[in-house]
Image (tube, rainbow, N blue to C red; front, side, top):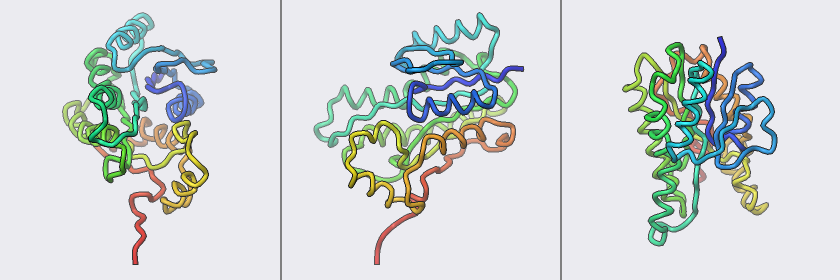
Amino acid sequence: MTNVALVTGGSGGIGRTVCNRLMEEGWTVLGVDVVPPSDAQNLHFFTGDVADSGIWKAILAFLRENSLQINAFIHSAFFLERESFEVLSHNSWIRQLEVNVGSIHTAISTLGLDAFSSENASIVLTSSVHSHIGVPMHSGYAASKGAINALTRQLAVELSGRVRVNSLVLGPINTPVWEDASDLELESAKLSTASLRMGQPLDVANLVNFLVSEQASFINGSEIVLDGGFLAKKETR
């Protein structure tokens, strides 16, 4: 039986690494992103906005045409705009909530539960340490990530017995979002963790690979912290 994974944000960074990791394990992977990857070999890719029901209708048609069901849905697509709360535009606020958390409802409500396998199906939602701490200029992002943690628990209950749902609370991961960071900012990010390094997309992909496997069948409704000790580390006298 073919295991099918659906990965949002599948064009680069964490999402693409997750796609590659699961394909190494023999999964059939469907990637979704607003831009196609530079190399989509062995990846079934759908280009579109995850907040638009049209892309999910296209994916549902593909699943039906090929008699496939989803075993794992990994949501890593995100939108981030750094701005202070009082001047953040309403459009930016809505867009961050729409892409980061609203698209989860759009996806699942459009696909329907029948699109998911009845055997060890799993949803993994990407959250952030921003859902637990306050960092200036991240209000929209933090609000959306906090909502993901709450939604994780809610979905785990509502989908009980059919689909497991967990969220990843990620610390600083070295992805393209850090490309414009200065050397000082990168060094600060490393020193902010107890591991004294930034995480890599493969760290996330390895954890996802475990969470969608039978070995994780009793992990449900959990916020799983993958932050190198970022939340644990405090500097004081």
